[in-house]
Length: 490
Image 1 (cartoon, helix red, strand yellow):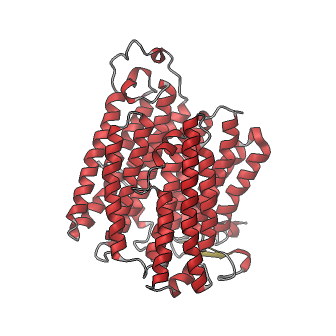
Image 2 (image 1 turned 120 degrees about the horizontal axis):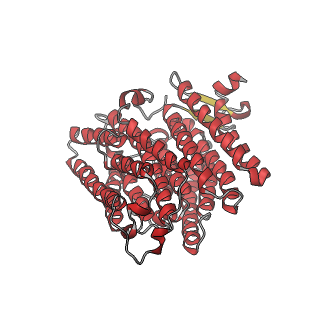
Image 3 (image 1 turned 30 degrees about the vertical axis):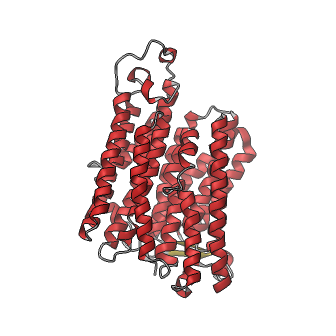
């Protein structure tokens, strides 16, 4: 059994266990939280084993003993292990938060746990699959479970946001599948490693890459394809918003990263990378400006996600430059980890504030009817990380980005990063100023006397993720030593 849990078969366990947890949660109905929580805890342990196991060499596992091109191969290197690890960590904290968020026995609670296990199954599948069609299957499971989770919020707006999310996801999946069909028609294989060996810089490869990346960009909500995200993320329950922003968007970004710098490298041009970089810069500015204009707390946090995703794509031109590719990849790692923790903490803290205050209107929030200082402290730390101030993980990520940009003379990129930091400071301090306002609320607000108590578990969940984002600023060297500074697998 120990060999199964530490060898290449560990990859199969990471996919099968969450699926079994989803089935068990459905079967038990009212007690579905317990198998789901067990799976989440075991998944965290398996993720730690995977990170340790990939330090010496990548892991490869052929399901059923059938190797590619006939069989399905699972593959994990340090990059995919990092994605599995941060997914397991954030997922465990969000699960703890969800225990106090959903009313026991409610329809939302019974639906959340199996859907969350299905979402975890899809995430692990996307990070470990070595086959392009298997990735498509994972994308479909990811989209359907994410859309279903959004509908757990009552109200017409949530349903409309979920339907918009569903249509966008289906369109993105169709574009991705068309690219997969082109590659299979030309090379009769969908194994990513084999495709990396046989594909070149032809029209077909460029068309396939363009279709697949376009579909994934829709799912990642890069500007100007972000129109579905603010409503879906802001309208979902707080733990669902945290999962969508911290993990789901990172999964599709990870696939773009793999396709661009690993599988279809020769077809990926610098002009295309520059275009993605410019769109990323536009996302930083547009998302930040919309966050400044937002009138509701979760809407502000959702628009900040649009801006923060832009930083990941702004790095593409630097990743294409061999002079700074290693440092730029380190920045990618830190952006992914720090943003997952900080944005997860912000959505969880926002959920606590909405529960305590009874509404999310920024203009009417006051410290008198908000949760204890634990939630506000978590919100402040997470906000500081998003701004990129020391000593947080967000600072390390932006520092590495600025160093790389200045080294190659990309002053325009450095300027956008600095301006984005100033805009982030403006909307974060706008929230903090309101939340720490001790003046009495307007007399017309009856909700001020109806403060709802938020459980300690929910408040500490937000603080834990915020503290991880803070600790990443002190642990930059050991964290980066865990991962290869090279996107191309051997």
